[in-house]
Length: 176
Image 1 (cartoon, rainbow, N blue to C red):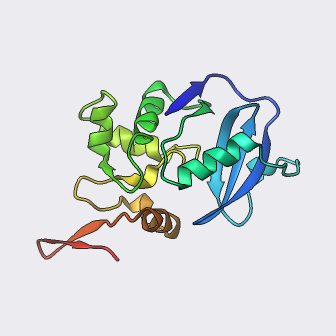
Image 2: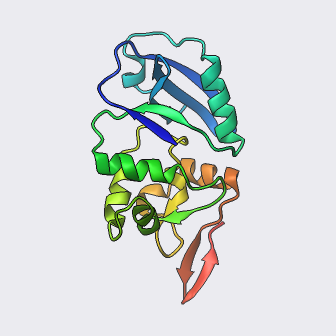
């Protein structure tokens, strides 16, 4: 569950955590997450001339719980996200570890039936990798959207044991 915080953070700090699927860079201010991304190095927006800091214990526990498949609750700055995007991203955090839901289902659960495309746009605007599990939100036919067909999303789904399908000659086949 996400507790959204309005406004912009003041003094952002950042650190790294070695996850089972690669290095996760996290930015925070006080007890509020600002952003998270995977990669060998953090993007320039993370560094902004500052050095990394020791990760606070609350963030270590959050990472351990998230990658351990346990439900998490955290605070996140809303930034430029609209209330609709916030609602859809919050709903995605309710999809259990190792499970998936379609864009349309996420929109319906969030109280916006028929807004599958809005759910897709919201997932593409997620500021926080993995904690907002956009890799669990898929197309209605059981396949990944084009923007989710990349090595990172494949690793995240494999880590959780998620198998996607694609239609081949009228038959749904697992993607390996």
